[in-house]
Amino acid sequence: MGESEKIAKLGAGGISVDLPVMEGSVGPKVIDIRKLYGATDMFTYDPGFTSTASCESKITYIDGDEGVLLYRGYPIEELARHSDFEEVCYLLLYGELPNKTDREKFVRGITYHTMVHEQLREFFRGFRRDAHPMAIMCGVVGALSAFYHDSTDINDPHQRMVATHRLVAKMPTIAAMAYKYSTGQPFVYPRNDLSYAENFLHMMFAVPAEHYKIDPIMSRAMDRIFTLHADHEQNASTSTVRLAGSSGANPFACIAAGIACLWGPAHGGANEAVLLMLQEIGSKDRVAEYVKKAKNKDDNFRLMGFGHRVYKNYDPRAKVMQETCHEVLAALGKQDDPLLELAVELERIALEDDYFVEKKLYPNVDFYSGIILRAMGFPTSMFTVLFAVARTVGWVAQWNEMIEDPMQKIGRPRQLYTGAVRRSYVAMDKRN
Ligand code: ACO
Picture 1 (spheres, rainbow, N blue to C red):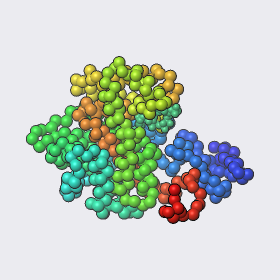
Picture 2 (tube, rainbow, N blue to C red; picture 1 turned 90 degrees about the horizontal axis):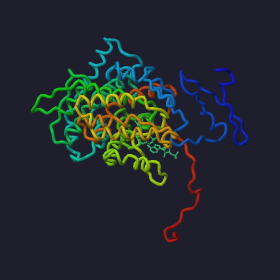
Picture 3 (cartoon, rainbow, N blue to C red; picture 1 turned 45 degrees about the vertical axis):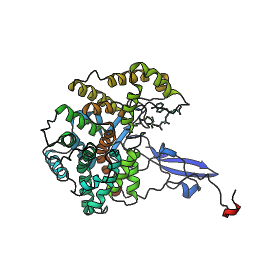
Picture 4 (cartoon, rainbow, N blue to C red; picture 1 turned 120 degrees about the vertical axis):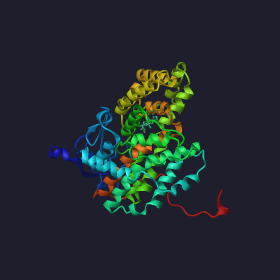
């Protein structure tokens, strides 16, 4: 960067201020506005943080215009094709792909923590059987801080590492318990001889009365879904985890906050919403009617699974997901699934439609994942839970990075106040 590019000049209210420009390893430069308020008595206004970098990070990079997603520099497509989730977890947490010894040690460290405190079983029983599993996840994950007191000191690197391993290891166990509880089946204990994805499928679908055989195509698909969702830089739930963590809250409480944020239909709830939408559309000949509805300004209906805050091109994860979807349905003999047919038609029409083309609304990762998960036997209410299982490693990687960042401060945005100015209290008998 040349000397003249290192400074941004801002003139406001008769004051001129020089602001430093910072440059990352790739991606847009950023203007450092930390001194702006002191120099000008003005804040910046950026609802939804569309132009604001909230932190410095070395974990994940997205180029939304080009449709690129890198974990620690590695393209997501390569990781999804050649790696597995355990390796991706190591990469996100420690910055490099593990060698054989590191990998074995890491997997041992994770599997050591897959069981949950036996008393947590009683905790589940406090929920109604028909509770949404995300409601159970928020409660039970938050409650981990009441069970694992020896890993809540955020200033101790060893305790942080133990909390990190515990969260990554226990999340599938808790998720599967939430599902089993809703069906009335007994909880299934984790099996440490299985891979992360296999163990999750086993805890979800095995019953004590029969042997459960894990289909390698299903466990590969599960592994890919976990890999594709593992991190996505400063999205809403990750920013929530960072913001909660910035006050010094313990990691279990911070991840519970992330889960709450992920639950919303504009974020992690989208694949559930896609499936409900496809079921509502019902048949191929009604696709055009729904595309029209999505374009109508007076109708707040949106095509679920389309559009993304950052990707203004094809979401690279959606391509891998589309491939996996065809693979899974072929393996299960469900190629003729009417919902898949409907999804393909919807994608075709939307990609040709001027409205979607002009607004750069492409299918996102959630568009196909719901169809795969349904074919694999997951109920719709579990879709966001699977997303939370996968994203936990990203959340804890980002949380650790934040704690170790010397620039870290408590998150405290400012506001543009437009409410009443100071006025005197009005007694009850004088009010209108
Ligand atoms: N269907 C119809 N119109 C849409 C859609 C959609 N899915 N998405 C955006 N638009 C339109 C908006 O109405 C808006 O139109 P306008 O400029 O005429 O007002 C324009 O496109 C831009 O939309 P914004 O909401 O401003 O874009 P933003 O970046 O804030 O939103 C979001 C991104 C929330 C993902 C949005 O595209 C959406 O609601 N999509 C459907 C939900 C979904 O699939 N979410 C999953 C996200 S991926 C993830 O979390 C893993």
